[in-house]
Image 1 (cartoon, helix red, strand yellow):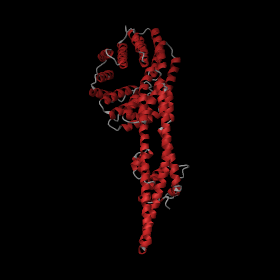
Image 2 (cartoon, rainbow, N blue to C red):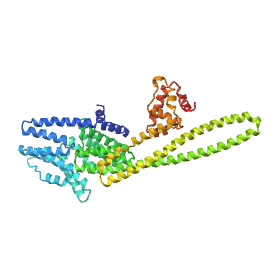
Image 3 (spheres, rainbow, N blue to C red):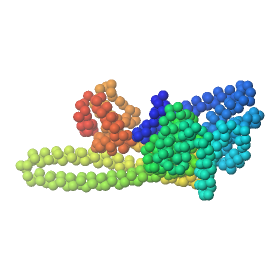
Image 4 (cartoon, rainbow, N blue to C red):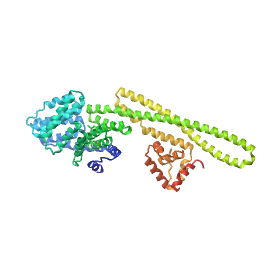
Length: 530
């Protein structure tokens, strides 16, 4: 109910992240919406079996076509054909035109434009009512615009455009000027004439109708998103495309463009995970719908998104290599510092032999130096452990990336897109991150074997936690602090959390401890020194 209210009152002007989160939540419910769709179809099939006459059968068959036309191509085509057979028996001009237009719709969805033109040109509208003529005009508009988008070549582009615009104006002359259909085709005409400011306003007016069905809302929001993108208003474009994709999900529409467009736009903005997920969802929908044109459209975007995904992984690998180099430089600096301290120790030892009266001062200095040596030794141990582990992880990661690159290259060349998708799902960033965390936990506990017990000693018994084989997320935050990483943004980046989430975790943990909040981190730094 909350989502339906959201769609009835658009959130224009809010951050796109909220829309994207809502879209992600709706994707999780995709199976639920599809199940509801199948239930409706099953009921209609039952009604069709119990129909009393051809008129009743025609009406139910037309309803089944409407359910299938943007859901499953093969079934839609079958019911469109059945509509034609029933219309011939009914000898109704309007039914004949409606059934013919239904078949043309299926041919357009499949990219069979020649066949669609042949059928539409051969469709007789003699004796049809204004309603039947209106359906014929609407299909002419859809066919000519679709063929234009496919051809992308002059003089055919201009020819298709002129024909589509001529039929658009016929529709606007046929319907009342204050009707929803007039506003719809007026908005489309403004978009085609690249009068984007007026077109955006017209589509927003259409979307303000609270009684608008989900499929129409999806179409209007998708057109609005495209115009906003053309004007460089990317945040608003993402919001509109999110609304379109959400409506498609809730209406179980598989013949869609919004999710594919959204994947492409987000990929160009530098995002990785969402574009990859959205384009694969769109590809699944195209396969389910089973029309070749839709598969080709999504297939053209899929390599672009995956290339951006690979490029991002490559940058992360380069960043890891740079981190290793910096770590090596830090170790060299630590070795130089240690050599310098030891050299100073030797000088102090010689001075102690010759200046007896300064024994007390030298003992104090030695104590301080021993403390520094202990801290340096601890730091050296930590760095040695983590650098060795980093070399191993980096080598393993490079091997994985090399293998993945070869696999992706081979599958793209051989057009094994389904296999490519399965392969990429088997190699995810989340899996790599989990392995990184497991390695971090193991290395850290090797250096500080009593950390878990000492950490739990800071809490009442009811709040103590003893995870098996690693650290909890909260423990991992304070493990990084124990290693000297105190900057919240660095901790957040390492753990893939937001800065806000890190601060929330820290505050929550400190509030549970019997140690005062301002002294808690000081107690953490004592672990391993007791």
